[in-house]
Length: 66
Image 1: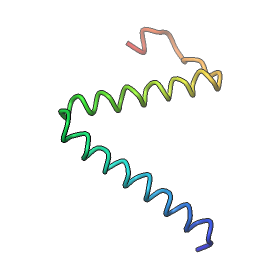
Image 2: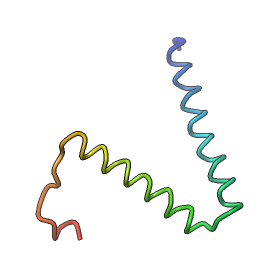
Image 3: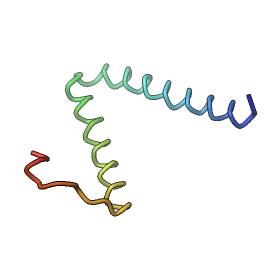
């Protein structure tokens, strides 16, 4: 493997491992439902930001998204 591939693999491991570590710490302080709701809410906000910045439109009528 190239040095760039090793660097990417190490970075991925740090990000992924850091995620599990932060979840473990959060679960000591708050409940599971609170933790999941918080993570999904922030992820939804970030993804909606990406959709808006890229100029994508929702496909289909709004009743499909209910």
